[in-house]
Every structure is written in C-alpha cells, then in structure tokens.
Image (cartoon, rainbow, N blue to C red; front, top):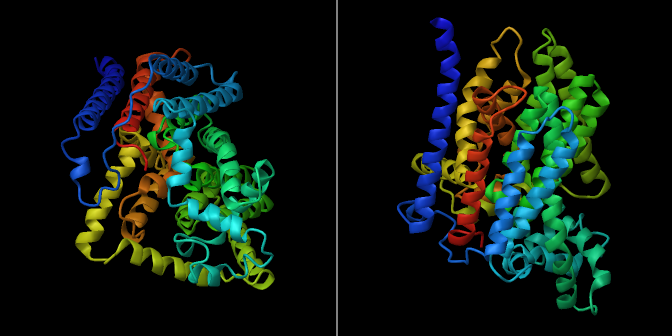
Length: 484
C-alpha cells in the first residue's frame, strides 16, 4: 500500500503541475484577449496595449509546426543526440522569432521598426558620429555628461556603445553613401537578420552549463527549450539587452563551471574577464555576480570538504575583475567607478526613485509580476515548482550543484527588488537572468515528463503543454502587448 502511494504521489504532483500551467495560461490568455482585468491597470506597468494582426494562415501553420518540432526535440534521446538537438532548438527559436515578426504582414520591416523607432537608436547615431574617435573610451564620461552620446549613454558604461560601433563598422561598407541616414539603413538591413541569430547563440553556453551542473542532458535540453520559447526572447526587441547580454553572462557562467570542475584557476580568471567585459556593457549585469560565484563553487559542493578549492577559484575571478578595472583606469584613462556613479544618479532621476518602503515593496511585486509574464507564465510556474527541490538538495547525502545556483538566484532577485531601483521594464533589463532561471525550471519540466512516462521514453504531454503554452502566450502578446 505504501509503495503504491509512493508511486502515485509523483504522478499526482506532475498532473497538478499541468493543471496549474493550463489555468495560468488560460488566465493570461483571457487578460490579453479581453484587455482585462489587471495587468495594464497596474500603476507603472510599462507595456501598453497593442492591436496587431494575428498572422496569415501559412505563417500560423509554420509557427505550429516549429512548436511541435521543439516539443519533439525536448524529448529526444538527449545523450546520443545532444548537440544536434541544441543546434536544432536554437534554429527553431530563430525561425519562431522571424515567424512571429512576420505575423504583422510587413516582413522584416517589423523588426526594422523596433530598431529605428526605439530610444536605443541614439547609440547607433552616436556610434556613427563618434565611433572613429581614438579617445572614445577615455572621454566617454565627459561626452556622456555633455549629451553628445544621446539620452541613454549617461546610464550605461561604454561597452554598450562599442557594440554599436563595431557592428556599424562591419555594415558601413554596404551603405549607399557616407551620410548618417545611409549608414543607419545599411546597419538596419543587416542586423534585423543577424541580431536575432546572435540572441539564439545563448543556447550553446546555456546547454553546456546546464549539462555540466546537472549531468542530465535531457534537463539541459529542457532549459534550452524553455529559453527559446520565452516571450521576451521570441518577440525581438532589437536591443543589446536581448541580443548580447544573456549570451555574455551565460558564457561567463559556463567558463566558471569548467574552471570549477577542472579546478583550474586560470580558467577562473578567464571567466572573470568575460564577466568583467559583460559588466562594461551594462552595470546591471553585475547583479549576476552571485550566480558566477555559485557556479564556480557548485561542483565542489558534492565533494566536501572543498571550500579551499572554491575560494581559490573565487580569488581567480576577483583578480580578473581588479585587473580589468586597473587596465581601464591606468591604460585607457577610463574611471569605471566615476561612470558607475554617473549612471546610478541618472538612472535614479530617470526612474524618479524615492526609496520609500512602500515603493520598494510595490515595485518588487510589479517587477516579479513582469518577470513572470515575460519569461512565460508556464516557465515561471516551473521555476516556483523546482526551487524548493533544488534548495532541499543541498542537504541531501550527495548535494546537487544546481541547488547552489538556485539559492544564488533567490539572492539576486531579492537584491534586485531591494536595491535595483527598477520600475518595471524588466522584460529587457533582467533578460540576462532568463538562462539560469530556465535551468532551474527545466527540472520540473523533465521530471514531470519522466513521471508520466519513463526515463527512456518521457511523456510528450508535459513538454507539449508547457512549450505550447509558452508559444501561445508569445503569439498573443505579439498581438496585444508587443514591445514598443
């Protein structure tokens, strides 16, 4: 009797999880289709209502076909076909990005609109005007203060502008003329195709990190499937926040994982260098620091005592961070701390942040709600379902490394809620956290599939419901609350 109960309980939990996912998806669908009740009624909700076409029948059929392919790839024999499946999932995500853009009925012009009408086009104009200056990094702070680099530069370090500078250098040869307008058009013609593809390159370090941390190829594929179907990833923003930042942070995590498993301080330094360069693109990426440390320490958790080993790796990362700061300051004349102070002050004024307790609590709720919405309500349900299990695994006879990352993620989210001074818009600003969140969520996805099927033949029902719901909400969001 007891054994029968122990067999039924996991199946009951997996079935209950599917019911919750279906209910949350139904509620989100109702809100998007009817425009009520409450998301857009929340004070400071950043995304306003849109009314875009649902898409031609052929486009919709292609979206359904690609979604079914993702479901099939999620349940493939992961150990034998791991990297081909990862590449196929990334390619499927890229296809969904373009297909969802095509639902507007104007081809790639939909993505050009996001690029050329967003505020970040200021960076492109600044890249054209100042990109050839040899002293751009040295004079970045003074140019930003003077307003010569556009409205957003004072809140960003120079790396973000440099991404536009280097990309524009690659595209300017295609321009029909030397004027600013011609160079902008050439830039747009190329990046509407290339940037979405770069965004999908994140699946490579994501898959590698998840596989190393969990030693479960199926879970790693589940993490990739959740990432490539997240609404904030599928609905192309044409911002560096979506294209480069998740890739940079996840690459640093991957390098830290390899360094820890090989006990290689030199690789830890390389991971620290990669993380430093990521932070030079956006100071907000520094929030991923606890994830980097947890990832470096995680493989040591199951081989106690290993704190000295973990400390050695952490020191390697710290040496890289200090070295980058010293090179920038002494070699290039760029004071990163001065730029950070400028950015923090401008950001606080921009967001009109008052740091009152009521404001902190309300925006913690609002930012978490938006995070849940844009990573996909089904994926967020899986995060909530998997988190207690991951945390509890740290006290098991053989602790699991993913538990360390989960605790670090909780710390990061709490710190961002308290000190991040962010009033919504986390669909872009916190997108670099989506890959590790998908790693956490994938456990619930894969366990549910195995419980309702077998380990070698997992049930299609769980990934079909979750992935299908993710894409459905992305498609509805494209129509009713798209990026602007």
